[in-house]
Length: 329
Figure (cartoon, rainbow, N blue to C red):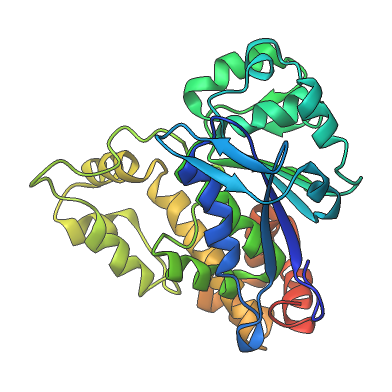
């Protein structure tokens, strides 16, 4: 985590055949994470297996100023996707140059992969016995190649403490926002998301593949019901109330909601209530019973149950982390 004197250093390892979009995700998300007075909370740098040009999967190369020795200075290392992993993808084996580069990483450094970047972490043994994911189209191959990894082919990202992996493309945005949220709280992550014009939070357990993520032309969506819910999270909410906002049956509403979001209405509402609780814990001194009521959980016991399940810590511990240290600590 960043300190007042020194921001947290993120080093991105750019490999030949990289996807420019995914290379840019950490720079954009971490670059928008600011502390009091606009102080940068992260310093994001890029290195290659050698300083110089790195091929992309597009019709241009990028010039990388730093070689692999920069990895030794990282607090977090990010490995984005590449389409030219060679023996890493084909045999699950690191090349000599890649093994030498990864040897620079200090013990305890946080490791992050986006999409097929997970192949690099797996080939290096960092994912043995751990949960991980990658793009759904590669998940079966990934599991065959690395049987010691606990591959979850469905989720957007996994968080195993010091090792985090994401599915493809936009899931890398979700994972980077999750890291900012974990490091500095919901307020900082939400502002980074607002600056990037992306949703502030998609839970890691949400399905990668949604049958119909965007409603077909002229087909009604559940947008009105969601907006209605967000104004009433503190109230008891019934499926029939939500369906009424769209003038459809509960069955039709539930099916349509899952088609659009990949989760059930109940799961989505719980996620929104946890997010509201986070904001109240960070920004107010309300007692736990009041936070529970405002977030829609009703009782402090219910609040503890859901926050613990979603965040891995109690509401009291979460508040202590982000209220005592302050934003950007």
